[in-house]
Image (cartoon, each protein chain N blue to C red):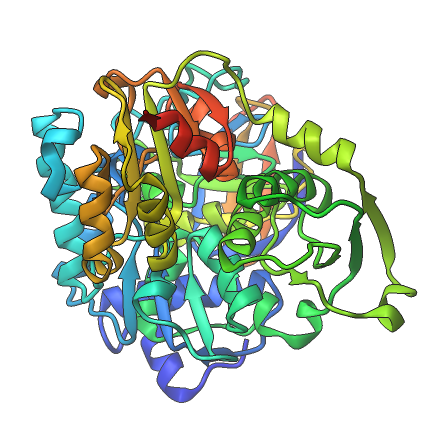
Length: 392
Length: 138
């Protein structure tokens, strides 16, 4: 890799251990993936925040960085944590763990990372088109590349942090136009009926595509939510970083390898995401975190109904969106649901809360929760989820 | 008998020690106890073995990128490996070796190394010397 004089100085330790270590990470990764230089980034989004998934692992390293004076050089945001401290009564009671989680958030904050604690940083601050980013959190990466036209690799927790400290990332992978070209054509013969079916399609495609770049036709008129679910699911079961929905590319498609998805496959993919037929203890929507419009839609559908007794209805979103959508939040909470921010059902403690069975409209959650949370899952559309929580 | 293997240098430094060889990819987050260095990953051929002060040889890493921080913690506590030899370096292990300052080389044919061999890893040149069945003269 060719480094500028300034970059070389940092590499040699002129600005201290923290920046030297960050620079070494970026240069080694750049070498590994064939980058020839570093490029400036607009923002960084950092994973490795929830104590539930990472424990004490990063604490020692983050403390050492802070001691060496590490500060983010660009706008940096953090992924969800293990608790919503504004709704502790709704969370599993884990006193010692709560303090440790706060410590991790504090360490990131001291490095200048904005603790937005959401997997949807694009609702807090939308990155510019064609801007380079260094984002971890695979669902946000796929969303940024595919729906916002920003350019980012699927960063890991340490490399997103290193990129924030240096303000740059290696020029490879999704930052190179040649790697963003579609190389497979997917013809969906059946329009997915709702956001859950878009998610199921994503799980099916992710397994098959690995890290290929698909053009996907036959999606009908997808809403933003539908594509968010599709991308998040593809990135869960595969290595997808970018997809092109409904692009008319007759000329191109002739040259590309082509795959057809029939109704039968979509139905099977959808059914395979349910692991139980038992009544849910919790109904969870908001993976990835809900948008303003999703909160509005939930509020409009739940309105005059009441959440059944003994059932938890969690709607997860960012603090930012929660505040903006206050009237809808009030409607949902008045009906007996809880609008949780800063965390979600997957990255908090469900078993300890007494939840054994989870119903969700998120294919990503359905894919992960049986192993990460040890719960049984019923996978269903938002409409069915709301029906399940509301007893007339 | 000494075998000399040439790989790709990843993290510089010179280390010598006893090889611990695995045929399976290793995930550090949830797979290695950060306090003791003992491999805890289920159904792993190193399960129950400690990576402490070994020349740790495995095909590549897998799992969460937070695994890099586990390598850092292991090294800080003195229970980490002395060097890492991989078939194919992956970002999790590379970043972990960088921040933990553990010499690392990849693109090495691991079938040439057995657990217990005395191995010298040069992270500057990418050369890995393997001594079979006898002590390396120091």
